[in-house]
Image (cartoon, rainbow, N blue to C red; front, top):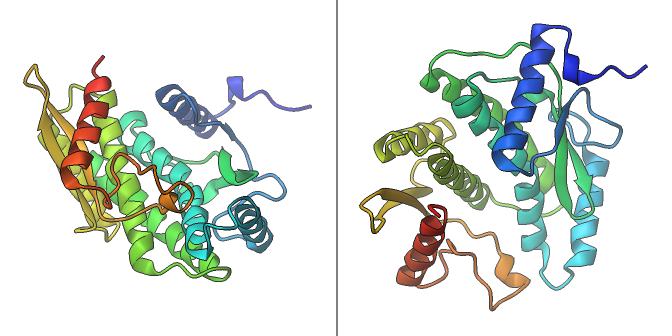
Length: 261
């Protein structure tokens, strides 16, 4: 008989279920459940050769003209976005940090979407301690992931770091939009702590704009490029560093203001 996780029998299960529910509620798109990895899923520290090969092949078949650099970037970004979201949500919203080594991820075609998290003890402490703990886990995960990507296609450490920095910067903006009571200065401080703990200092930053009502809002100034322009040269991300800087600021400002509505 399959156990219902709606009624978790111990503290570890309860905390894990609560974190997963919080992530789903706060994002509207994260799909997780407690438990061990299913067959064929990506597991930190596991034998992921087949998973990586299948994802790489799917990307190459779907985007043959984009080339190896793009496939490498997509392998990397596909597998860091869910851990990064969970790290930030656990640290700043849930208030306790799980063992992300127990996180497994599901492939769906060319995307990685869906995860399972092994129930276990969660570490609390103040925000700085939680950032330090979670960053240490992310460092271990991403070091292994970079080796796995490079076993298939070349991805240099600097672009990989910048793409991780982009994700964390965007998540700090996301956090500021979900917790409007947090001062901009506090979000900036959190951001600095994350980047330092992940050895990403100097690989991007946050900028402040002022809304018509006087409120300060945050946008991202990134150094990394996701290479999506290799799919559609006429369409750049709002934060893309390849576009004119004034246009970048204007596009991100419009998005930030739209979040106020």
